[in-house]
Amino acid sequence: MELKKQIKINNVTYEKMLGFFIKCGNKISAKRIVDIALQKLSLSLKKSIGVILKKIFSRFNTIIEVKKVRYRRGLHIVPSPIRPERNFYLTMKWILQSIRQDKRRVGTNVKLYSELLKIYTGKGSKSKSLNKCNQNKKLVLENRSNIHFRW
Image (tube, helix red, strand yellow):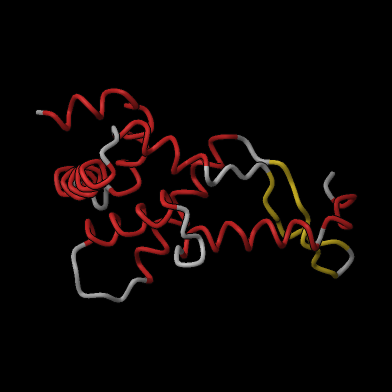
């Protein structure tokens, strides 16, 4: 019961996050995975789930991503601005990729918990999802001379 009270604080973020974990329409197991990971995170950090989710998604505040544009038989990497919905999608995509790349033989909820803990505590060198975000920022800075290809 205590977990449901905490999740209602930031219901929209929680529901969106849950939507990414639903696979083949199995909402019950996806909800169990996310709930267990968030509850363990809340108990270990002694903070509410809403505060934890807000801080985690604020670490990924990317407003620009790179896209490949084909122009005169050449492929250019062009930085382009993104909307907040796309920002949330990229964040969840990077977190799920890091969970899938984790080859430990433990449950998905343990992998999600450890990844979210690394993101929250700021250990960016160990978090694969934050490394992906930093690679995106690095590509944007390297290819900012191609910004005129964005029509």
